Length: 249
Image (cartoon, helix red, strand yellow):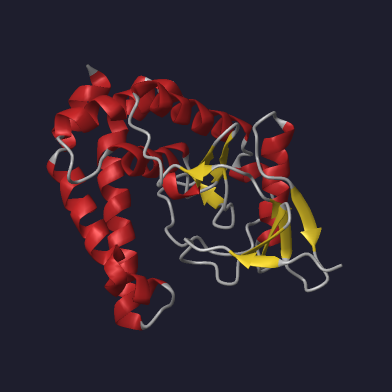
């Protein structure tokens, strides 16, 4: 009997994602073999990562379906929860191979990091964290060359620095996540500017994609994502001194 397939919604960049029983099926991409090898490396270090099961009869990726609720649907505001996110990101980074230790990545990065030196997930954000009996980051398709700073900047901003929140409250949340990560003084000092640069880069990607007709980013720009990332970029840049004070106090 064929397992019924249920379309999964919420993603923006990968079409035709479905659930079939305890698995997720999604398109096979040029970088998929490298991504699956990276996930296996992280998993072998003891980090909980979705299992990969190769290809199905239609040539699609087959991955473990991780039960739970996405953190974007159950916002994590408790400081201990944010510290746990920081610890999970640190575990992923510590398990990730250095760029010099892997073959050349098969595809260019969507948002290239300054001075990449590590293979990273590149989208460790609330919309990709499943929270339940397990806390697991999903959607590794954008993995590739990056750096701890660039990857952590995106995580820290997306989990803690909402433009509508009081910056003082956000700063405490930011400190909890970065403390959980165990960032050293150099990384802490660099994070505020990196968060501003990373959000600005995301807005620029959407804006330029709309101008150039590049999909799906162009349509996302006019569907609310452009406004979101513009506000996020302005907010993060405007309060850099607050973030720096919280991280280096």
